[in-house]
Image (cartoon, rainbow, N blue to C red; front, side, top):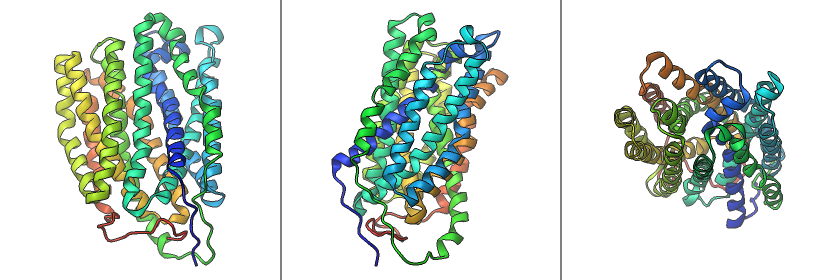
Length: 426
């Protein structure tokens, strides 16, 4: 007989979501300050060269994400979601403080980029292990008719971290000179996130546990399905990841390709964060009412259609109005797309391997496609001299991601497969 899971309070769910937001704040802040970090920590004869080194190091953080997804996901599936979530946050705290305190290239030479790479690898390992246990926890804690909304909290808090990071960047870029922003302003942004790490670890220690160990032998059927599910998940998450990081790239894109000042660029980041956060929650509510696939396919099709025109308009006008409005449009679509897609994939996975499988597939997809996205898009802009090159790259990826969506069956309450959240076995 399967055992029942302990009930979890709203405060505990909020604690998981808040911790998730802080981890993504730390990870994504690097992306938003890529220009300034490049100037501080990397060698090069030009700003463009330093930026490419900086973006390549941002990508290095994705290399260790599959290892973190697999290793920490296994801990979550064997020992519990709670210890895995505490471990990931501790490692992220160490990495972010280390990166923030790394001396500049002018002070210690090549040791600066080496340390930056090492700390980014540790960040990637920690974040790779965060997604699987967190999402599994939320799915397992949710009532069947609220699962998509609970999962949407995962992405709403991630995107809230974009809002916070953008607001911090806007404040710092408005308050500091460009040289001060490059020398130490970006370090302040990282340290602000690190200050909250001890408190979040303490909160996670109070969480209940959703993993229930049940007896009995494992069915062979899920094993046969895993290859199919893994392919579908990689296609789906590859497209979603490239879409997400292309939208996140708008901060750098506005400064380097459109020659818009840093203050306006970070203003667009704030618009992005507000929009994505709001529509993540709307997506979860709609998915619980109408199903996952209708919301997901509508969002994927919309992004495929509007991606190139949105970048064209930003490049054509190169002003705040075009930048803010097109950022809001793309962020709205991504806000709908991600919770619906990830809920669909997560529910398709057997519960006993959910954290490890989701974390590994998610991290592999991001390591291959997300880690290279911003570097590739900046390189395409430099080679083609076309500021809308990132849009073509994103649109191709979205076309691939749609295939993954159609490979999965509907898993919502109106769908064909519904797994009760209080059972230990799938």
